[in-house]
Image 1 (tube, helix red, strand yellow):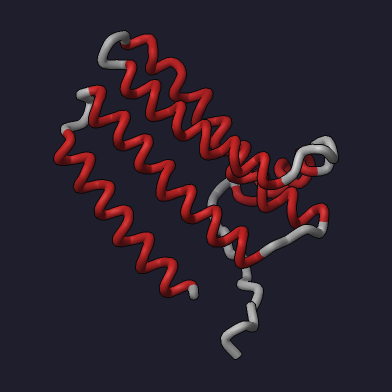
Image 2 (cartoon, rainbow, N blue to C red; image 1 turned 180 degrees about the vertical axis):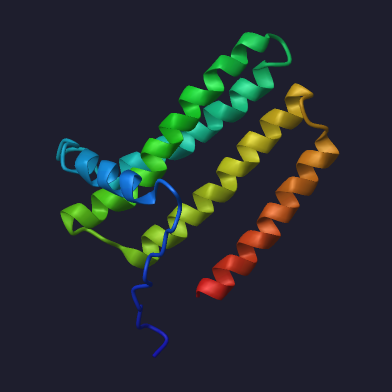
Amino acid sequence: MADAFVEAERSSQGLLTAVERRALIWLAHRIPARIHSDHLTALGLVSMLLVGACFALASRSPFALLGVVPCLALNWFGDSLDGTLARVRGHQRPRYGFYVDHILDTFGILFVLGGLAISGHMTPLVAAGFLISYYILSIEIYLATY
């Protein structure tokens, strides 16, 4: 049936996966009720925009690069915690979450690579090549997942 959504089994086997999972669940239980998973998703996207802006500004001042790491940490916080928060609170929206998360990831990588290209730390041609490769690989993964 085309309308049936089968919950995919999540499989992460990284070195710190178990620690990260426990930390995310611990954090999710402490997030105020007025903050929803969509707020965290937006935080992840805005933080990637800020990463790109920091890279772009680095062409004028190398001190702008100091903002990259905290912005990446904010991205991890928002992007990793949004789904965990939804699961902990029982507010999963599998199709919506999958779609929004991956669409915003495509914008996030555009912001980062765009900032790198503007900064001169990466040539625009190399950034475009990485972006196209990322998009092609993403399309393949999304189709295989679907």
